[in-house]
Image (cartoon, rainbow, N blue to C red; front, side, top):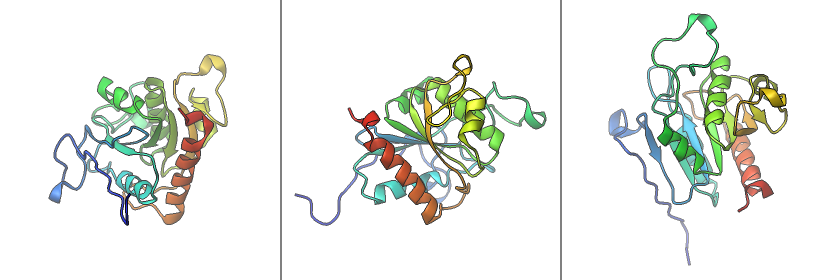
Length: 211
């Protein structure tokens, strides 16, 4: 019978982190819990792309005593835009955004994905489309830029509120909830953390996610 604290064992990384003490997860790494319930997918770290607030969301969900397991995946090629995105603003520098077959398998092992992909609105929606086209999973989108279900449906992303025309659908997965206004590189406010936790708990407890 547990008394006081409840201990969680987390397999933190496949490789050493970045910075002092390895505090920032390196690209291509995943922290896994015992049961694959929720996976938080974040961008690759770099000068412009930082993994925060992904770690804050992970910690916040665990601190709430949620009885589900939370994993975190930092993508190997999580910067830039997907190769199928329109050429907005004359293109991008560096590598294109993409997923490996291993990352697709890691994501699809879970019941729900939390997708966090930055602050450029056009980049965010096309990254979401790329991920959900490859992965058959329901998702909560967390972004700094304000986006809505219509933005996603216009480019063929299935959502719980607005569906694209049948012949325009390009995704396997579905966006179930959106939380905007979560600032990249900063700890989320208490109000935004509450929005994320509420969305995750509502979905996991719904009949749709019961085994």
